[in-house]
Length: 146
Image 1 (tube, one colour):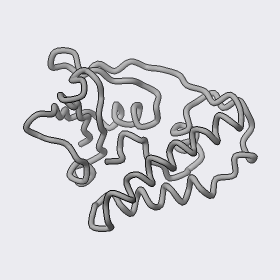
Image 2 (cartoon, one colour):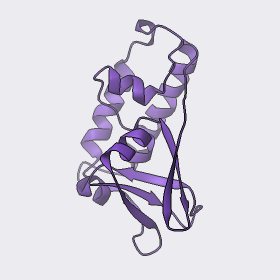
Image 3 (cartoon, helix red, strand yellow):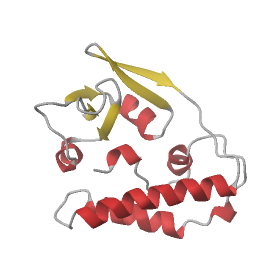
């Protein structure tokens, strides 16, 4: 069972976080009293996790729209990876190893820092997350990181 979390205090129509299971959901920081949590299929979760779709909440329904992303060159990939490292660093500085996501985020940061961008043929006609999924690279979507 996977979850999409829409934060009412930010914009109730936009996706705020995603969680693959109850353990991951419990590691996220959100308010079950004010935020909207929707249970979704694993297939829909994976589409969003791989950045193949965007999600909105319309009334009380989750609306998923397919998208396609690409990475045109090595500099764009490096920039994307640096942004992801920053997201990981922000989490790792705020939380300690007692957070259930700490190990996964730390491991993902190591993957990002050691990834050889020169080993990739460009353009990559998919998102970074889809590239990782297709190449058996362990990854997190930024929406999974508290």
